[in-house]
Image (cartoon, rainbow over all chains, first blue to last red; front, side, top):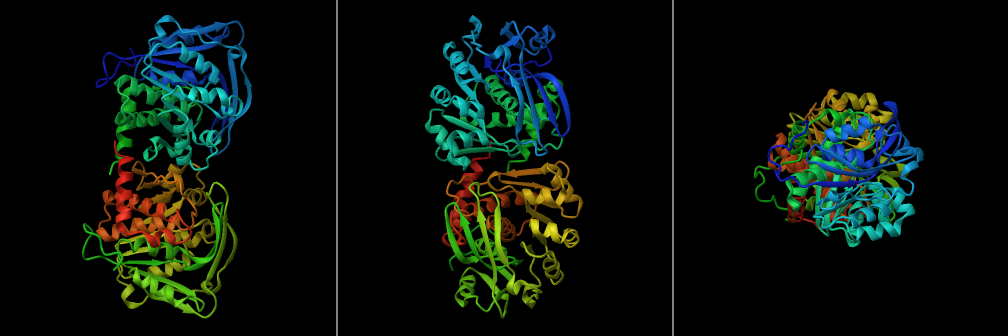
Length: 313
Length: 313
């Protein structure tokens, strides 16, 4: 097995369930262009989290989805029995990044089989302890959550689009999640607060016990309330080629580490932030999943040790 | 004395010399407007650094500068014998900040007595060990440095304006400084590198042993070369009223701590970053120097302890 459960992690490995998009992306950045490469929030998450622990993947693909890719998922300890195959085309996204690589501009987006997708959990998915609601319609996130028996930790990601178009559903969902993960611009849009510290506090009042704001090259803020903040920098890398999936990979590294250690204490969450930041730093160094395909847990641990030295006084 | 040398700091306190602007600022932010309040890079620096150790202040003011302010400097252990008083008006700056508080837009700027100012160091300034070249014309920074006997550490700040108008002088200066301090946009402009990690490395190749990039709400990066990076977050504050002088205050807290502990080792520099970040966090909470006037070293230490908990795993 390519990624055995690393030493030091809990041996009775709890399972992670992720729901989100599985897509083909066409991406243009100042460093190149790739056409119809595998992407989607659940895909990036699964590749990242499976470095740490097995993953139950829930999503939908079209009849054009290659069987060889299903096999690739399986080889990474990603359970694909929750992938619905519907007749039609897989979700397509086409995006472009400017020189500063900060924000993706959506050039085109075709939901295809994702349109009217309703998640149905295989029986053995329902006892998953760690749930990651990757970026997808909040109604799908809610429907997924309803089918889980008694999760230990629910982490939720979202994006600008849902804040703009499905705010009531998103707010309803927030009451049921433990951790909300979102980027700085999304946090500002969602809360109406320019100051990110104020934005964090507002999110906490809406339900989640913990808010995590992803700031790209500027790292991550975690808060659990009024004066409890924790900061992690991004791993310093100059080889950024394609930021697509960085946030999902962060989520995968973060949740994967928590699930693998079976410890969602504040202290362990702080460590998990570093794992998330490191996994994301690999993702952005190549297009699509190429960098994540090449690394193992030892590469992650190496950067984690480096980053620890960059913050400890 | 309001700010005695705090316990734990070196008792044979070495002196800091700062050269920079002394100004009257008119500032408009989303949180208010202030007319002709005391400002300038050397002023903010001196107020911040004098929390830690005495400061030799070098600069120029006009005949309109109030004697009462000179007395205020003295009460803070800021030696004013290096302030030239020339006939004419003191430097005036008028700036405006948008909602995101990120960048000051200069509305007007009148050099007045700063025009053709040539620094002359009083004899007892020349043996200063810690030199801070605050934001001012790089030719003035160079002239100041030439009059110092054998400095232990030279820290230099600058701004976009000098990168655009005096690049050869700035590059010449960089060969003679130990640490270059600048903000993220200035670093990008100076190096032509969008990626801040690449920008850091380029700066190091031009002379300074250490580069520090100030990123406002996103904290600070320090590097000494290829793979040696250190990160400090900004102190999380929601009460930002006026960002003017934040960078100079950071420089004051940083250099002040190093000078007071008389230790410019890498490990101590990392600690000093936190002191810089904390002092800057007070500055931005009120207009002008108002917040710095109210605090003492114990307030600083309190936030330093808080911030340590926000980064230690």
